[in-house]
Length: 342
Ligand code: SF4
Ligand code: SF4
Image (cartoon, rainbow, N blue to C red; front, side, top):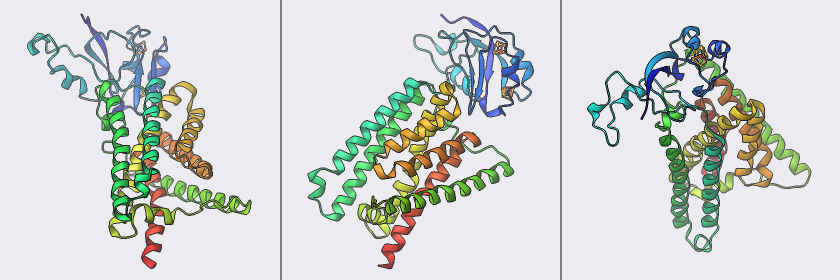
């Protein structure tokens, strides 16, 4: 049975990462990182110096049920109250006193086990998608049937990843938006302008790197398909409907899901273990390998580094999603513009 004691209420949304709480925490049981506040309850001596140090209300005292595992707790604002009204198995709702709050939402960093499990599911889904798209059944289809079948396979591919992400965040009592801070950006206008400027600069940089790399490898005689333009119009069809499908899948859905998987989960899990720079390199390498096209390894690695860095630097997935989406929008725009020119 859970014991009741005064505990900490953690609200990462109010935290500005000043680090004062971490400096006064003598047992070292407190960590603050991108979008999370982490307390190791086993080490915490309940001195509440962090509460005194935090002038932003991100750490406050709260009467709470003692956690059985005592490992992680950081909650979004309002979450504990909402949970406290839930009926517990085997208990009537009135059995929980109104002044006791059960903290059930976990907002800490992703573990390597969670990241590995997610990556395994993503890779299996990727291989299944490639097997389906390369099958004889596909080759025997008419172009219009193949486009629709391809869209269905891609929908199943992304649905598997969304399902895996949803399973992970539900285990923590969170929604996808809460787990990855995908709600409304609560930053100042100036901060948003900095993010936009960085996205534009990195878009130019990553596209320039891609172009330079293409010229370089062609000069070496590797003769890679420098342009994916033809592929995109043959994959989705060269008409307006094809353009809409390409925008939906290549510019919107793909970047959002890939950013959540690679920057939201993998980068977060690695960063918590090995530090930010090794984590950036590791997730960018996996991101490049995941795309499974040998000649694209370098440009995809560069894109993974850029999106990882901006997600870390701006402490939000939104700039990374915007950069990734715009990066993909360039070949989509060129491909369909060329198709329209005939
Ligand atoms: S209550 Fe004290 S020991 Fe616990 S996290 Fe805060 S500063 Fe650290
Ligand atoms: S003192 Fe408060 S605002 Fe500063 S890092 Fe700690 S929780 Fe965040």
